[in-house]
Every structure is written in C-alpha cells, then in structure tokens.
Image 1 (cartoon, helix red, strand yellow):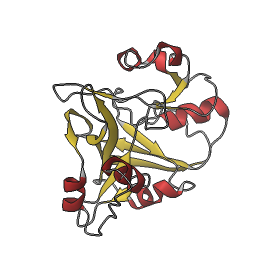
Image 2 (cartoon, helix red, strand yellow):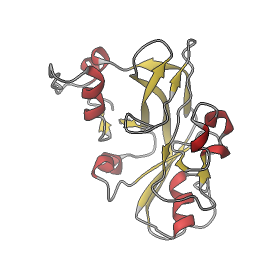
Image 3 (cartoon, rainbow, N blue to C red):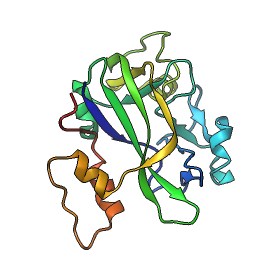
Image 4 (spheres, one colour):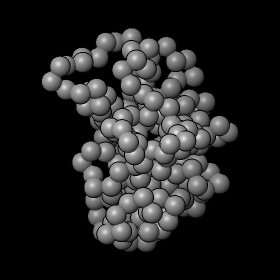
Length: 212
C-alpha cells in the first residue's frame, strides 16, 4: 500500500480561511474555480455548512469542492496527466491511500498545517477526455467543471472506499511530523517560516517513503 500526501483547500493567496475550532474540528473551504459559475458546478452558497465561515461576498463564486466526502461515494480528482504537481498519483492503485493536508486557522493562534482526512482508493477513472456518462464520479468537482465548460482535459478521479472521510479532529503536521515521515531532508531556511517551508514542499503531491 502506497500513501500519498495532497495539499487541499484555500491557502494564503485566497480571501477565505479554513477555521480550526477549539475541539479540533474544522471547516475546509474549497478553492475558487477560475471561471464563472455554470451548472452543474457548485457555488459556495450551495455548501451552507461551509459558506457560513466565509465572507458573504463570496457566496456566488464557483468553487472546486474536492475532495468530496458528502455524497454516497467519496471522490477526489486531479490533473495527473497535465499538472506536474499531481504526477505522483498516476502510480496510485486500488488499496492506496491519499492523505489530505490543509492550512487551518485557529482562533487564537497562527495558521498551521494539519492532516484533515483521507481517501482509500477503491476505483480509478483515468485520463478523462470525454463525458464518461453517469456513474460514481458524477459529484466530483472535475466532472462538474468539465460538464459545465466542455473542457475534458485528461483529469483523473479516484473513488473512495471504506475508511475514507474527514477526521473528527485535525492532526498537526509540523516540522517534527515531516522529519519523522520523510527520509530525504527538507531545507529549513532561517528566512522562511515553518509554515512557508511546508507549504512550498507540499505544493506537489508527495508519496510517503516506506509506505507499502
């Protein structure tokens, strides 16, 4: 079994922030889409349990809600063929795990990275270049965007099986966790914060060494 680490949700460049609450629970706000909303894409206001944590002015924007653990079939999609950041996922097979990392904002502390959930791969729809028709992938953000725009750009969608979902409480992911998981040393420069270093290294989806 291989384990992949994927950075998801809004980051420092976005207006919205994903809050972390005192009990460890959180709300993961999705990144904005690059185009205007068209059905069947989702708007932030279509996700009321999340929209309440974002500025009201953002309610009408289209968002990329991925991973999606709400529907009966959990999914996660990425441009594994075209986007260098996602190339590692082309080696994923059924039984592998994708662990999700997110930048969260506690109320009384600086932002930090946390592990927020995982998807246990139970199926893969690879290199989607045309509409595959109805199926377990229907609710995924990549399918929604492609059906709205007609742009089928060889994206992949991963179906989640038992054990997939968000964690009840976010799990800190800081330098200590990095150094316990990765055998290749990361450069912790004095002129960059721990948050910046982790964000930089995890822009690309990474396979955890030794996870078999």
